[in-house]
Image 1 (cartoon, rainbow, N blue to C red):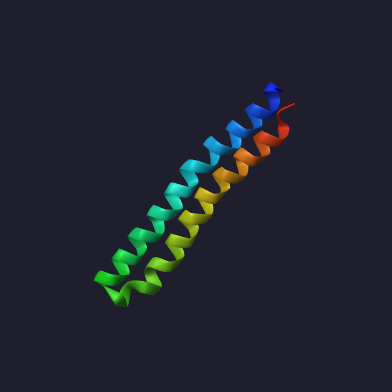
Image 2 (cartoon, rainbow, N blue to C red):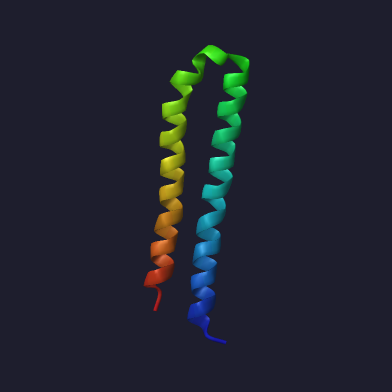
Length: 70
């Protein structure tokens, strides 16, 4: 079995777990906060989207690393 294939799979798997958990937690806490104070939905939306975008960027970096492994 080719070890580079295993390395690529591990890089994308490990690099994708943390952002997935982070995005789930971001959405969960945002919905909880909006549920407690519905008037704050407009103020919560933009920081929530920015945090989700930064978390997603980490997954994209892992994908780039996985593609660069030779």
